[in-house]
Length: 222
Image (cartoon, rainbow, N blue to C red; front, side, top):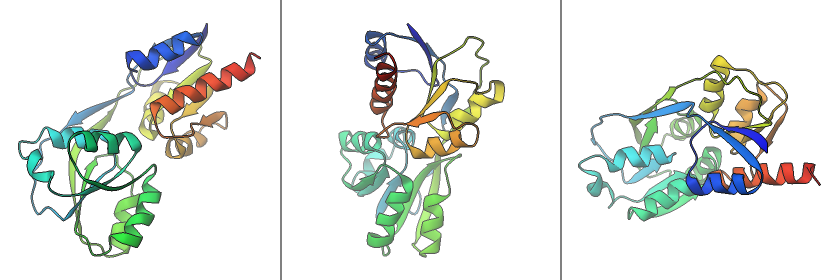
């Protein structure tokens, strides 16, 4: 068995895929998400989501259904899927904030955008909105809290799903000779600050990251 660490709890289906391919798995949630209270004031004519957590928090708001008449743009395939499942009209989505920023720059200059964010959100999209003088407001709807744990047993690989997951892990641990698997280039950019021993998944989904892990070790054993 190949021992690997996932820095977030995986679904039963995701774990099964790893077990079927000869991996043993340790899981720990290195970040915690806390939904926060917020007011829905001065909404624009276009909603912006950059994570599933933002969508989940907004869905808990008593006036969530009112928002569903307003179209949205978002970052991430899974974010788009969650919005669609909850009857939002999605105008456009991209895998990365920088790509969505390009879309906004070309198509949304006259919109009034409401951005639902978390406390650790990156500056990419806010900077683009300000630079292009696009009317916008930002509502913080969740908090990401680093939740580190010392891992004392060796791993062949570590799976990371966000830059903050890497930051949390490194509060009580360090990288040695493990392969670091990153869900997309934003997380990989954080890994690069600490190691060159990393691999980036093709798509920004957990399933793609798992496929990447399996393919890497399958190739090594043949």
